[in-house]
Image (cartoon, rainbow, N blue to C red; front, side, top):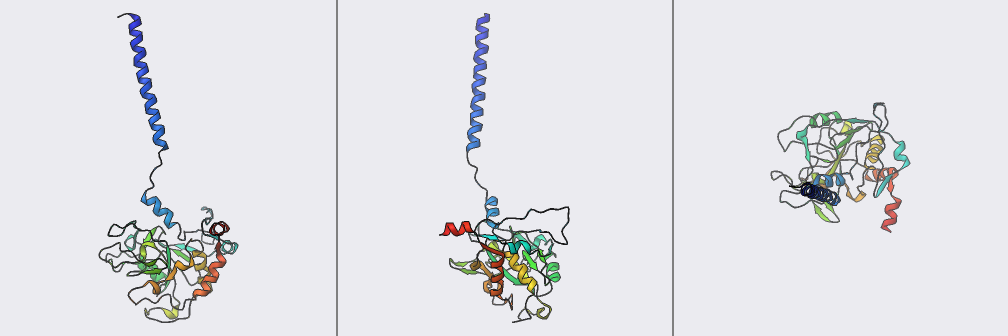
Length: 286
């Protein structure tokens, strides 16, 4: 074989390898341009961001080594100057995993769930510490498991319990009646349908004169600090007023009457003090 023939073959082989390399590179570039499908978990994270988030604002019991960037509301509502000035104390109490679960994207029949977020108001029935102790105790019996996402003590302290992206077991056998009709979801074939899959549950600590009686019709009511902390907490959400309800209103058993002696009008006045319709949203609506 002459040198010219050998050189020609080497050149052809080099050209083939170069062509293959270019083809592979083009393929990778095109693949990178293809939009990636959003996973169900990402969709859920977006949806559950409508709920109040854990806001660790400056307070006496916050570590100076843990600076927190204030969360800015986006969407329908934005928080106000009054919200920024009010800084309730907070605690974080870890709930036993048996007492809460994941939020589902489908019910037991395979139907995709699209319920907008709601907020359900409760009261503890006993002391706040008693409720927290119960939630931190493992329960194998599904009919006993229970939790809230947060609760508010008599002194206004906000206790964060279950992350908002998780499903707290706050209202068994329940339904929410909205302008869209009756809303409820069955995620467990052994339990009645409930609002838990699309609800954020927040509870007020019951005053001493109302504790221990699940059928009490009235008590001395809640403190000013509790009303302010409740409004402050919910002001962080994007949930409209017509989707804020009570345990009594969603309960199907006819046994739940909480939160009793709750002044809803007073709460709404404070809520509108701590949040307002975003000018951008108002302009888009008009």
